[in-house]
Length: 393
Image (cartoon, rainbow, N blue to C red; front, top):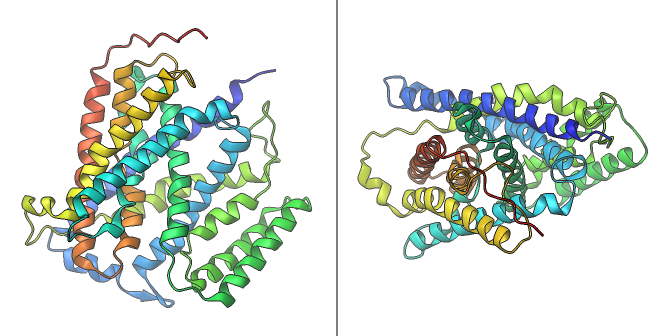
């Protein structure tokens, strides 16, 4: 029985995410340039033009990002049932690292905002941007072991699951019970279709569109509909052929992945990273919100991820990723502080309608992510390649 295929699936995903991360970096840089140029006013105006009852920014953040979360949900389901996270031994190290990497940054943020700050933004530095982080790794070439790339991807997927739970529990507006009941009914039909053996994707996508609309109307954030739909898409599990063309989940994931990676996420980055620095200075980075976010991403992430990995390995519950050194593990832990896409997304949910705080959170996300990218890349670039010995048990 061959086991090479599951790894190849994740490697193919990592490759596309790495390329997408580079495109995302370019989109974010362009947004910053435009926002601070004579086109800045037109940039802001375009984002707030209303089309079909929603602003352009809302279409990006509520509709396009629902497709992003659909892909996140598909990745989570695939990896949990038929991939690198399909068994508890495989889940322990990235799972523990993800939990540490969510909890410690939140504590850093709260420490900076406990007195007269804005503690409701505690979840902003808890996310890792998988595309951005893998994009930085891709620039380092083959010097980074593939096991560390797999570890980072698995950690970020679990981290995304945590972000989905946080959004569902803590960023829900006033509930419309009728719309919520409608969304629940559509979800039940989707589950029955799955159990009934329906494998055609079109019925799932049509009902998924209805689910998105009802979720939007209900007050629950509309992107959650993407995850719910993903979890109902049938997956044909087969370790020997994990890319089976007859599996609906694989077909849908492969169909939307290029659109999400190279169009939707860069559009989100361009629409949300454009912060105007007019009237602002570096001193503003010491305000509670940007300071808490930057410290959470740059310090909290590396401390939370690395210390958890160290404890799990020392306890004998898991091994260091194959052919990786402790310095490389630490470098990847620092890269986990790149929280760009998910941190911006959660930040906008934390401070709706407050332009000043939104600008400050963008400053904090950009500063923390930039520091994490540079420091992580330098650590990994100069790391020796001697692997950590695997302890005998």
